[in-house]
Image (cartoon, rainbow, N blue to C red; front, side, top):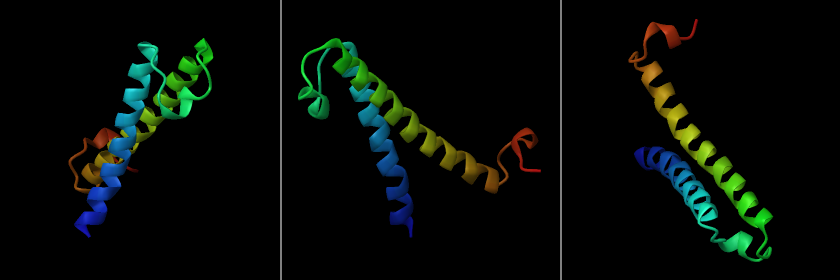
Length: 84
């Protein structure tokens, strides 16, 4: 059971890290695998940056939501954020 829990946090963490890498590479004008074959225009780097942003927000948001849910279930969250 702990392996499943670890994988459920590891996979979105890796996805978030890939998103951060895509955003960094778009700043330095370096197209990565799926975007490399679209050409060498400015829209390719913008598209890579936005998709990296979406992956980063999704991955980090999933991990943060998981930690928040776990802490709320254990009573470690202030009363302001408790369910009513």
